Amino acid sequence: MARYYPQSKVEIDGFAAKRYDALMDIISFGMYERFLRSTIENMEINDGEAVVDLGCGTGRNACLMRSYIGEKGYLLGLDISDIMKKQFEKKCLSYGNVDFKTQRIDQPFKLDRKFDRAFISFVLHGFPQEVRRTIAQNVHNNLKSGGKFCIWDFNEFSLKEMPFYYRIPFKTVECVYAFDFIKRDWKALLTDWGFGNFRETAMFKGYARLLIAEKQ
Image (cartoon, rainbow, N blue to C red):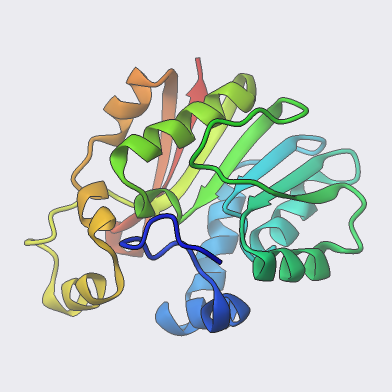
């Protein structure tokens, strides 16, 4: 798979894509699954909702969210990796109301329906700022009025003030775009991009958070 952003680390392919879930468990010291379950619970997804998962990866998120949307809801995963597609479809094959679409999220797109909720999980930080704006605009355009944009990613924090035992792994693992992401005032940016009524849940010592913004 060709990489559109060579400096980014959110475009996963090859061995890393095939073993992505296991790698996330290792990197997070086995805490990723617990944080993911807690995050999806805090999204307060309602039965019957339509949810789009941007950069959906292996389908791990989708399987958990499926239990909240029920039989009457709908979930669409968007990703560009063929390896992720195969894993997503294998995990979600038994669900008739879960689909996958090969789609770049960094370019303008229009889906066949409007969604109640959009979820993006540790993907947004891996793009240049101008691309993040495009992604947010895609979400805005494909949400229903009052729909929720749910961003699970790094919180805003000072890298210099981060304890060394967190700072060293962060600087080693993450890309240059992540260093920029943590400096941004995301509520102010999202307000400028047509969102409001924010709700947030901090986790992992405040270095990560779920930020929910409503389409205005």
